[in-house]
Length: 347
Image (tube, rainbow, N blue to C red):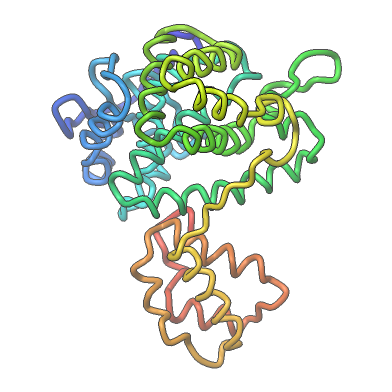
């Protein structure tokens, strides 16, 4: 096990089982809330294992820490460390658990050799997380996650600068001008890495790409690797799986330098828009158009949105800030009661 994955927690803690091989740990007074919120852990673990390869770590537990824990989650094998912000009362943040479970394969079993290759941990894990979420909640659910992820990706790349190596999948962390790995930490390895894998999948279809993932994990299990190892595995797998014509088509379609080394936007622009997302945007626009004088006819649709659709609605309002007035915001809050939302993403 890579030493950065070893962690110890000490405190007044209790354990509760929520399945055959899954459980939760937290302070005694918080345990009932945590148990209720994370009662689907067994399903999430089973679905991820079904998609990938057998789970090698035995039991899986989530330790919910005090508010001072500064991360959403950390994927220590057997025992994910998680922020209490994932316990909202409405299960809107359970996707964090899906992400950390997927790290059991990519990040913990197959690990990046250095922080320039951090996307091998996070891009693969986001891809797997969204596959499982899409299987449980529908393909559109995963597309909405990818849509929001893409917006975060571009925000972070713009903040770094589109020519900064930190906006590439292989940031420069060596030499006198290089910063620390913390400086390069952003949505780039997560979302640009996800998009690269999503693009690779589009070249070979979902069933074949699942087979590639299993090959990749089995081949590199319990080792630390670089993108060169990943590319070699991809090339050999393509040659072993497809006829010569298909091999040429697939291998020629991937510009590795542009995807991995080049800063700025991905070389292929992918479309993650959805009907539901477009409706959430249209609802926000309608509130602005009505200027606080009345409510949109379909405003109650918001109450049926899951967390990420609500975020799309709110981000659309925020993006139209110059057109917002106090009257519009008062109307939105009177209709949708956003001030009291439990969902931290909406807050």
